[in-house]
Every structure is written in C-alpha cells, then in structure tokens.
Length: 167
Image 1: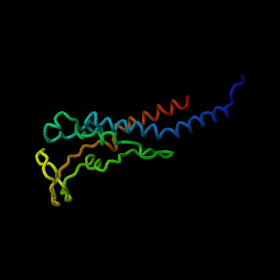
Image 2: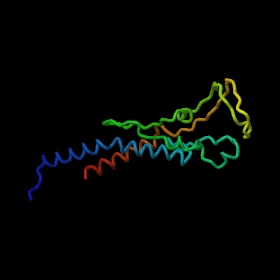
Image 3: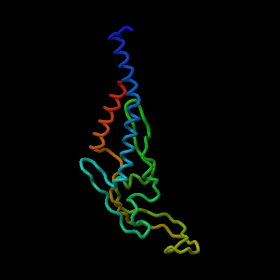
Image 4: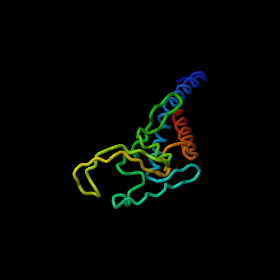
C-alpha cells in the first residue's frame, strides 16, 4: 500500500468537514429543542442563572400538583425545528398562545360573544354570553429564546460534532 499524498489527505479532510458542516444545523437545532423542552421539566429559565417560573395561581383541585404551563401538554410538546439552511437552524413553536406565556402579558382582552352550557360545573340550558372585556395579567414564564447557558451548550455540541465528523 502506498502512503496517501498531502493533497489526498486535504481532499479527504475537506470532504469530511463539508459533510459535518452540512449536518451541523440539524444537530444544533435538535439540541436546542431538547433544551427548550427541558425548561418545562425544570419549570425555570436559565440564562446565566436559574430563574424559576412564577407559581400557578390556585384555580381549583384540577391544577393542584400539576406542572406549571402544562394542561394538555400541547405547549410542552410544541418546540421544534422550523427550518434549516446551510448555516442556521430556526427553532420555534406553532402554538398561538406560546408568545404570551413566553413573554408575559398585562392588559385588557375582549372576549367575543359565545354560548355557555355549564354554570359552576353543572349542565344548564345553553345560553348566550355577550361580548365583554376583562383584564389579564399573565406572568412571564420563558421557555424558548436566547440563553447564555444554551449558547455554551450549543458551542460544545458543535465542537464535538465537527470533531467526530473529522474521524
């Protein structure tokens, strides 16, 4: 067997690096999605230090002991890779109320006219509720966004991925 030339080694390394860089956005995006979903398990946001979410207001027996921001689990399962390009992966959620929980909201909301069939937990003859306004104060409970800790995790993951792709 002959020894590979310097040019052959360079071409092989370029090929491996190109393959590693092509898959890097997906690897980074997957890691970020996992980290965002972990915020629900930990019930906090971590930038430079952990910031626990505001506790749930007592809303009855149903919510006792249940995790914050978790009712059906739809929001918890929603973080995903939205798109990838040659050098970036966009991670986000398609849930309409995710922005309100992630950023918080304080203000007045208009509730449209609707029908109601229960009153204090008991079934009643359907009746119409007219349009009305109500004040809402939803605390900020970040679960997705930029974080110092996440950036350092992604940097380490990128280094590991590129190192392994060069083998």
